[in-house]
Image (cartoon, rainbow, N blue to C red):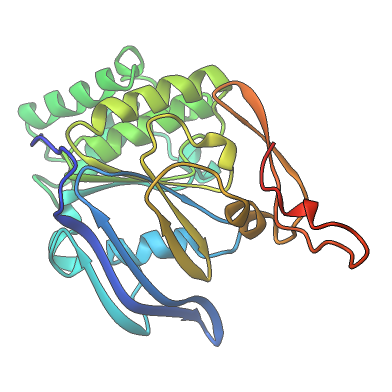
Length: 273
């Protein structure tokens, strides 16, 4: 995989993008630029448009208006250079194939077609499984895996094609705290060679590896650091009430901006404690 230090090269560009399901608006007038080498967390409430945003960038959905560029080209021209780990779905475990075969599916349309994979492609699949700690389980059936094991298998499938940019939708689902830490450490190492974009509805999952944050709730705001602000908390909760979160093993409180009663001093504008 090519080296991917932070640079001024855009890998994702959206200009005036809007998307609706039927007549219900999901994203409005989105303008967003993500640079090569970034480690981006996309956060927002459930139903706010996070997954829709990623699918538009990958070309899986087409916006009603606006310009989309992935790795400098329209998504249909460059999506094979991207890896995608979708949200965990229980149906993944209902398909009775081996772990190795699941990972090989990540090469379909890139280097080969099922079931005619070459020896070298199987080696690449084994290397991807080794990277995520699943090589000893390569011959297991996916319906025998735990939720965390399946997540790591799906990550290996996203990595097997050596992508330049990796998208992960709720990658920490069904993984315990220890497993989340290990996975973030792995993503941090991968970020040395590729851009990382991951979706989460849980701001407590902003690890030390995250470099920037995209807030999505129909509109989109880019924050060039991983600091949680009162505005982010308000957007996530939909209210300006205090929100508890745990980051790096320590509890923090993030306060939204409250409207002080007229008879009180304006002391409630303090953001954090």
